[in-house]
Image 1 (tube, chains in turn green, purple):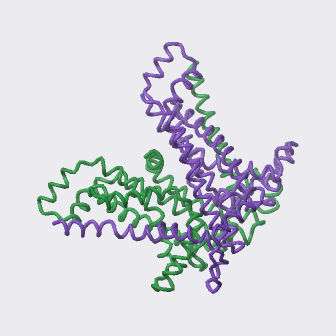
Image 2 (spheres, chains in turn blue, red):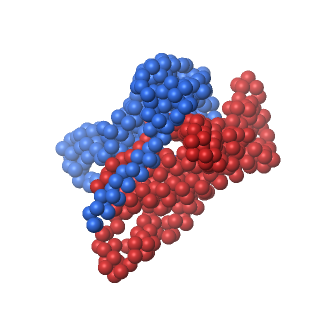
Image 3 (cartoon, helix red, strand yellow):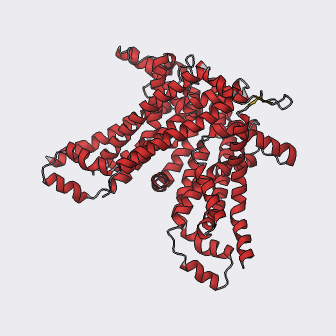
Length: 278
Length: 290
């Protein structure tokens, strides 16, 4: 009796989860339907699985280009955040003076500032750098990556800082006595020990960079530079009412996310829990 | 030796600190200055110092107060629905059922999809799928286009935000639940405590740290909502779902009121800081030591 009731509860739970994801189902089935079919019954399975709308959505969204752009921006942002934040956090933990404490405070205390408070003056600063220092900060992937790194610095330094504090210093001291430079100590001894927290930082950064819309929308104006989020926005602005093609476009944008989730699920869930709890 | 240490310190920390200063600290400081200036964003046009005028203007801005009201209403509703659902999910998937892991995976899924895309998916559901359901079931009091009704459009936003965030809070609640020793709940069970009593007298009090985190995350997320707002309703119908963040964006980049918009942005920061810090202090007080 207990076993059957448990089995029923298991099935009910799985069902609940599937119902929870019904919006994904609705998106998926309608991306195969003709317009008449879609308006006739928005919930039914499609009569045929034609890929025609995927093809047209792919073309209109310039999908392969924007997928490449998103990947490029995300990967480089993550690499820079991981390298620079881990180095900074390690130095801040291992240096006990006023400057070090002050810098850490600066990173932490700005975490609550909403993006909207910074966006307009940030654009002015970037514009100033462009005109006076001749560094192309606006309308380039490099500029976007630079700003991403700046925005993600606080949380990454905070996470690394907390983790490094728990690592005993003895190993580093031994290496220093053996004549290892600070650079060598960090990259050869410390950084390999930071693997778990690096995965957490990287996961959190991938998700927030990949899904960011507002910052890229303010900095990138060339069509060829657009990320997936930007391209989705313009795609909807231009072709709103053609729902079947729109659903095909949305399905396309979700495929990379699903693949990422399938590959790295264990780390993602752990990373989310750790990133929030710390 | 001392000088060499200082050199290493600079080498390790300066690249990031320089980027961080350029992107966060300087814009924050000049952002405060901009809030006392009247300017339309065109470089050739003069920036005029107007003192506190921008802040005074905000207090006569009906639309800003409407958006403030929307944001507060939305945040309160979202706070309740996100955490209720997230907590329920976490209790379900930790009850040792065979499909727990699968359910956890599926519940969390929407959180990985960007807010902009989530908004578009639901836009279709609220406009077309709902119309279809209404026609089929005859329940057109529930199933109609929510997005063109000023009252329901806000609830639609709450639903989408809940769909996005419930799985996220679930993960945090699961971590909290796993930290509660089984013996404690077993002992209470032996003593004859009902499921409800075990939940309210043992589980929830020990889960307070998780509540602190989840409330903080939901509060700040809801307060700062923009992407879902943009793609689902774009503030409509007639500004009935225009939230704080969108109001600021429109003021600056829509109307070219850079000074007023920036004053709103500074006010926005103060409110976010005040609300979230107050919440953390309140829930922290309720946390119990084991």
